[in-house]
Each structure stands twice: as C-alpha cells, then as structure tokens.
Image 1 (cartoon, helix red, strand yellow):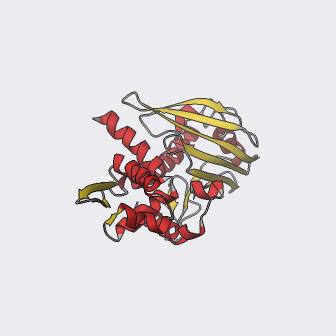
Image 2 (cartoon, chains in turn yellow, blue):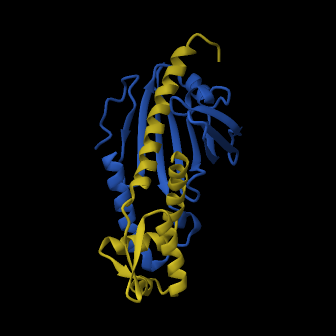
Length: 113
Length: 164
C-alpha cells in the first residue's frame, strides 16, 4: 500500500533522529544482542531501552525474537535504505531545481525584470 | 571527486560531495546576475521551477529577508503533499542567500543551503552548498559517549552521498 510506505519513510527518519536509536543500530550492526546487552553502554533502564527498540521495530529497522526468557534484537531487513532514499531524493531535487531554473531563465529572456 | 570542473560552460548542473555532509551543485546560467537573482527570489516564479518535474509547488510563505520564513508545498502526482520549510539567514542581493531547509517529514534534520551568484560578465554562476546538520548538533545535546557512533553515522552518510 502506497500510503503505508510513505508514512513509513517519515517514521523511519523520525526513528533515526534519535542518537540512542542510532547507537542501537550501530551496535546491532556488529551482531545481535539482548535488551540488557543493548541497555548497558547507554546507562539506560530496560524499560527506556525497550521503548527505543519498539520504535525501531515499528519501522522494521530492527527485528526482535523472544528466545527463552530474553528478547534477542537483530538488524531488520530494511536497513538504512530509506535514509539513502531521502538523501538521493534531495540530491535529485537540487539537480532538477537548477535545471528547471535554467529553463525559466531561457523562457523569460525577453521579459523586463 | 573534485571541483575542477568546467566552470564557464552554461547549461550543465555539476553536483559534487566535497565533504561527508556537504552537497555542492554548480551551474552557469546564460543571463546577467541581477536577472538571475531576481528570478531566484520571485515567489511568483517559484511554482515554475522549484519542485521536481511532475509536481506542483505551492508557495505558502516566502519572506525573503533575514529571519524571514519560507514554506513550500509539493503536490505530488498521486495527490499527496510534501511540505518544506525554513528561515532565511542572509539575503545579500545580488550575491548570496543563506537559508535553512527542512523537510517536514523528517523534523530535526536541518540543511543549511548557501547560494552564491557569481558575475561572469553577462552570465552567472550559481553555486549552491547544502550542509546537513543532525538534530543533536542543532540542539547541542551531543553526549560524549556517542561520539564514535556519530562519526560512524557520518561515515555512513558520506558513503550514501558518494554512492548517489
């Protein structure tokens, strides 16, 4: 569904706007970890960390799985594709903007400014 | 990539990434600087060029003076809308405009765009430098323990920029 995907892009950027959540992604880039392993370097309560993981899980940047009594966290399938998409989009916007601006100047050449 | 490109040929947009958080685009226009600057800052002309082809740009606000706000909305072909906003920081006709750029879909990530207009004698070179700022820089909340992680984030951003 198109609408869902568009909302997902926005949510992904919001998820990435938080330094703790980016830290979690960096950590998971080195391999999966439990909630308490993730909480340790951030000196954060398990509850606080779980909230961050939930946000990342909602946008599919992280997947979690209950293994016995602990919850194992792994990088999700989507990775940072959406962040790349935004930067690429911005870049394309810039190029198109200057191209179109050039066309406008050509078209209005005779006009008095 | 370097900036040693053809600087005086009109009509080609050159995009380079000189640092990990910078995008620089350059283009020479076959028009005098006053006319280029006037067109660039004319709200009535914005819908004709600012947005990508296929989108309609609506100027909601465009107060071209220091501390003045701007807000443009793209209407996409599917009917959805994307809002962009920012503040003019410096307006020096006909030489330079500095403004912030924020996509409303990604609040907290602010770009600073600096556009300079160089007089080439009848033609004008426009250089637009876009510098990405992260929200924690803006808010001054850089926690010391996060620095290495941030460097990695910036490295990753640089890779993304290089790849594009």
